[in-house]
Length: 182
Image (tube, rainbow, N blue to C red; front, side):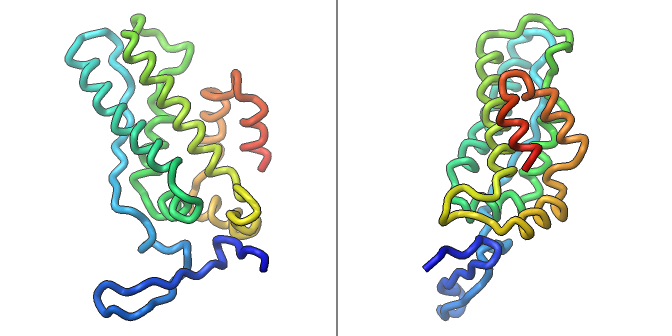
């Protein structure tokens, strides 16, 4: 039997209050995990230890949350992406505030450089997965529903696409072209 797209899939589970079996769409707000994604803040322009420590702590939260998100199965990932506003705000804050190559700032501490690399990779992989409607033959969203999800939830708009090109274009050009072309 062929697999159904995620947008047509129904999940049956036991209602905790009534104890009865309930059927609901796989893409439903109830499927979203309670998680708060913190906003990204850029590293300090100077290497004041307290500011560096504060940056590293916040950035670790962001990176850990994105790694958690990327490890989710297909259905849980998409419920989180669609129904978690804090995730979208977190990703938007990264695109908005991450230092660009042409920004001037004092050479950052090695810990800051490592954290920026980790965040950069996690954010890129998150957007790459968000741009992929078919992860496997069993885990996919129908193209029409995928287009509606992207459009209705503002997952990719022109400013985001431009930021993605500026931030990830060098070294990731083939994947970025696939991301934007899809």
